[in-house]
Amino acid sequence: MKPLALFGGTFDPVHIGHLSVAWEASELLDAEVRLMPANVPPHRSSPTATATQRVDMLRAALRGQSRLALDTRELERSGPSYTVDTLQELRRECGERPLVLLLGADAFAGLRSWHRWRELFDVTHIGVINRPGIETCIPVELERAVAARRTDDPAVIRAQAAGKMIELAVTPLEVSATHIRELLATGRDPRYLLPAGLFDDPALLAPYRAMPLS
Ligand code: ATP
Image (tube, rainbow, N blue to C red; front, top):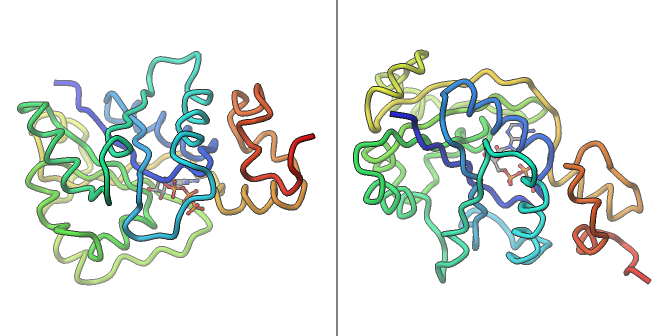
């Protein structure tokens, strides 16, 4: 069965790093991929753009292709959205369909600080995406906890509903939303680090620009 892969994040703003790795993960796993913006990220400070603005940017970024979709369920929930709750909800909807939670290597390295993280493997696989430019050291305890779950075969992911961990070697792109926000705040125009659709409407990037639109 074609797996359903979820790529969560703040997407503040969505950038070509997100889109490219999600696209390649979809190819490597032969999966449907949904980008899933987070409402109140439990581990981080508030996003610069509002939830509505981040969804508008995601819609503009995803226009014109059909491999990547948007899932706004966490924004529709009030309060913090714990990944484990979301994945359990998806599991109830999906029956035995394989689910894959896609995480950048930096996010995966911090997995042990996530709410009820061990329960994730009851309902989903985890796909770890390499990410350049960010120091990621997988803690020994985490490595030990996932060692028996490791596979490098996408067929294993397709053959069972949950419980495995796979590293996905995608084209490394050293892009981060933090850097893009810094560029925009200092009046720069990171045109080719952002999906073209974000430039269609000047209001989309306005939350990050130093000068208000005239
Ligand atoms: P920020 O700089 O604001 O922390 P970010 O660029 O890391 O943002 P997020 O929305 O926080 O983007 O990330 C969502 C997911 O995308 C995370 O799992 C993160 O590791 C992954 N990710 C973001 N950028 C890349 C990239 N260039 N390559 C691989 N994974 C990435």
